[in-house]
Image 1 (cartoon, rainbow, N blue to C red):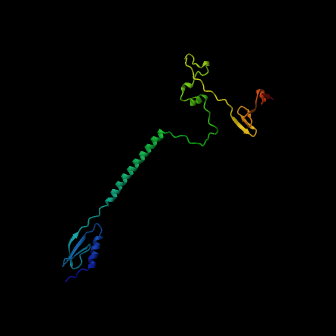
Image 2: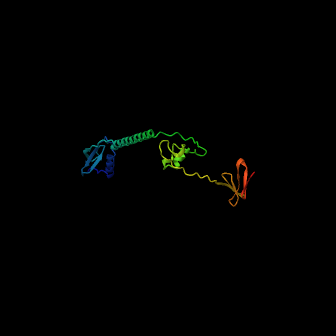
Image 3: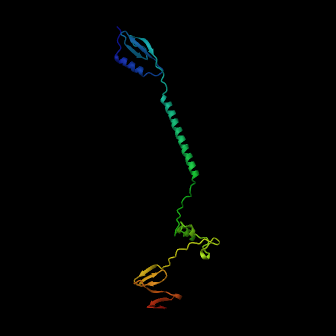
Length: 204
């Protein structure tokens, strides 16, 4: 009676069949009881070859081709986005020329005063008739026009107090006032100082 193959031998044969290289065929062996053994060697004693199981060669992995195509698409999209950004930046630089760099210069002093003509425009911007090109002509008429110019507003020439001390205050015209806000001296003709004394003015 032929010896029965050990279960360990069958398991080893199956593992061997699973780990065979791609180019080897696996031989199927069957004993008298119908038990099947797979091996890449000759069939064990008590068994006979009942067939062969061809093992196809392993195909190259498809994911490599898929990854390369996907990577190519990503690179193409990034390249297109970069070209678009560069085009937009170039168009913006062309439309808005760069300003010269700030060298840290600071203008010191008060701002320039506007011209008298500009002041007149700003003061009476809502009344163009006030800007009179024939302002120097007497009578307030345009030559040959017969249009009367509007009178100028009166100029406030009142003196303004600018300095005060314990003895009183001095205004912008050089007049001096006592603590009761009464004029006590002023500069008269010839640079003399005049003082009112009652109804008389004494200048020295």
